[in-house]
Image (cartoon, rainbow, N blue to C red):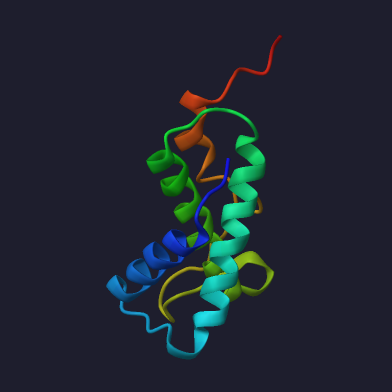
Length: 109
C-alpha cells in the first residue's frame, strides 16, 4: 500500500504547531520523518487492504514517534526540568500496531 508522505508531513507539522513547536529550520527533519513513517507503515501493511484514512492515521503516529526521537538521545525524553524522564518505545511502530490490527490478517494459517 502506498501512503502519501506529503499528507503525513502536513499532519505532523500541524500537530507540532498545535503543541507549540515551530518547525522553521527543522522542516527537513519533519519531511524525513514523514517519508520514513510512510515506508515503515507501508512495509508493515504489505498487501493487506486497509482504509486509507486508517493507514494515514497509523503513519502519522509513527512520524510523531520518529520526530520525538530526534530530541531524545538514548531513547530518554525529559521535556521539563522538574519532571521525571520518560523512556520512549524502541519500536517506532508500537503506536501503529493497535490501529492497524483490526485490518490485518492473523498470524496463523
